Image 1 (cartoon, rainbow, N blue to C red):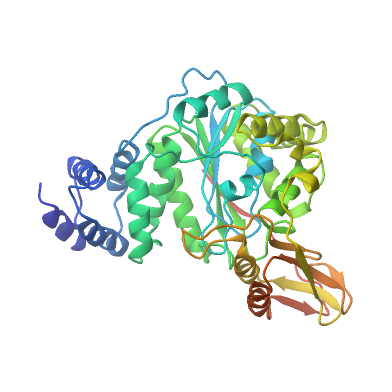
Image 2 (cartoon, rainbow, N blue to C red):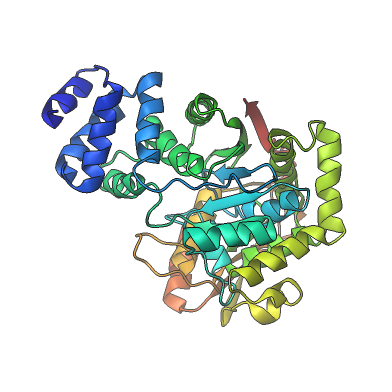
Length: 435
C-alpha cells in the first residue's frame, strides 16, 4: 500500500478501506510510517472526519495494535467509566468503590492531568506508596482480589494511541472528534468490558465548550461501543463551575474519602450517583434508578465502599490508613492564603477554567507532559455558586509552596468569582443522557 495515496484520498474527502486502516496503524506503530506522514493523515481526518465504518475500523486497528486484556475468568459483570475531564472532577475515586461494593468488577484505567484539568492517577499517587503502573498479571490479580483496580495504561496496551496522542498534541489536531473518540474507546474496549459509562463534560472548564460538540463526541463514542457489543451510555454533565470544593491532588483524595464516608459536597454527590446508577444498569445489577441510587447510598453510608477503597489502596502498595487519617497520611503544603469576597451578595458564577488554571500555576497540574505535579498544593473552595456571602468572607483558600507561584495563581483568579444581589438559577448538573 502507498501511504501518500491514502493521505491524498482522505484529504479529498474519500473513504479508507478496512485493510488500509489496519495496515496504516500497524505500520505507524512499528515505525514504518513516520510521524510526518501520520501528522498529515491526522490533519486530513481533522478536516474531513471519518465515516462510521471508517471510525469503527480505525478504533479496531488502534485496539489491536497491542495487548488486549482478557477478564473472562471474572464472574462479575465488568464495567468502567470514563470522564473527558474537568476542574475538581475526582468522581472516579469515590464512584468506583461504591459501584464495586454493589457487585460490579471495575478494571478502571485512568489518565494523568494535562493543562487545567486534573488526572485520576496523579490524585491517587498523592497517597504514599500507591502504584498505578501495573503489569497485566498484577492488574488482573488486584481486580480478582478487590473487584476493582485503579491503574494507568500499560506500555503494551494500545501503543498506537500513545504515539498518535503525542502527535496530535504537537500538530493542532487534538480537537478532532473522531480521533478523540477512537482514542478513548480503543483503550476502554481493550479492557474486555461488558458495559461502559461516559461522563462528557461541557462548559467553560471542559475541553468541550459547546453542547453541540459535547453531544457529537458522546454520540460518536456510544456508537462505537454499540458496534463492539458493549453496552454504552453517556451523560453530558456541566463544567462551568468547579465540581466539589477541592481542586488539586491530595485535597481531592480527602474530599473523595468524605464522599465514601457518607458526606461530601452535594454537587459532587449528585454527579457521582448519576453515573453510578448508569453503571449498575449497564452491569445488569439494577435497572430501576431509584433502587440503584439506594444501593449506592447504602454502600457509602455503611462503610462497604470505603472498605473496598482501602483494600485497593493496600493492594496497590499505598498506605491504607489514609481512609481513617487522611490529614496525617497525605502531604501538606507549607503555606496558605485566603481569597476574600470583594462585596456581599450571592455568588452568581465561578469560572472553572480560571480556578483550574490557578491550581495548575500553584503546581497541582501540568502545562507540559514532562512537568512534575506537587500533590500537596491546590485550592479549597469556601463557597460555591448560589451561596450567600458577606464582604471579606473567605471564598477560597490557596495552598502553596512557592510565593512566586502564588502570585501567578492570584493573577489568574482576577474576575473568576462574580457576586450579585440576586441568587443565580440552580445549575443543571446532568444535562442529557445518550444511549
